[in-house]
Image (cartoon, rainbow, N blue to C red; front, top):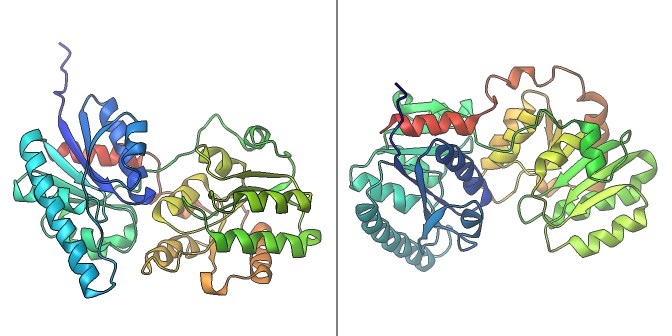
Length: 363
């Protein structure tokens, strides 16, 4: 006789940046495919547009994070989080979920804390090597902690911590480099550099990279995939046309798997999602950690630098000359087969499935 698993009601508590939201959406999709009812609860800067776009319902809490600014500003943010906690508590009492899973940041904090007050099973997922303030506090009270990096284990209680990886974009087995370059309108044989600076782009990375191409174009026979963000797109488009090299420039790009597959080298920030994707797609990188991320991105970057598959450049020292030297070094010396073999045990595929399994185990 066929046995059917009963549908469970699962709350995903998240919000804030794409670094929290993308892993949450990946896990939600796996849970939905398993026949479970998934509902989002948190602070969504875009009004929940991304959540709706993926077919999920949500409750948008009104709250602000603590920014280490003035005492008055932090007090106001604290009051907003407290108010959001009461709203989340009331919502959870009505919805009666089987489990609540938080994905870090101030967007997840009220929902997870309210769930613990109601004695609901709770799990948190930490994307970065260094825990954020919300997860560092909640770790004492939740039943399970899922981490993305092995190096995070020392920050959490060993008896309730599990390494799942960070749910992210993953390689498509049927897509090869030649096909990806053709789809992007690029040449098959040229070395290809993929540049991006996070979901909104980075003006500094955008500017220094194109400055470098303008100064040293004769020294490099490359083509470029560049996700600029909306702010710099028009200006960069003019500069690329004047350069006369093959390029694919986008203000946004929702087929990032295509860009990773086509690339020989990636120049980017070092968010947890990005570092995970570099390991999965096995792409050498120059990592430029976001300088205002409280050291989180530097710690993430070191996981790839220690494995000698990436080099790190600090934002304050970023220059056209330095970028050129590091680019040529990585293109010449970081392309050997097997470079990523030592990372396979930590950055294996299907993190979303592993994390979804841990959520269901709590029920």
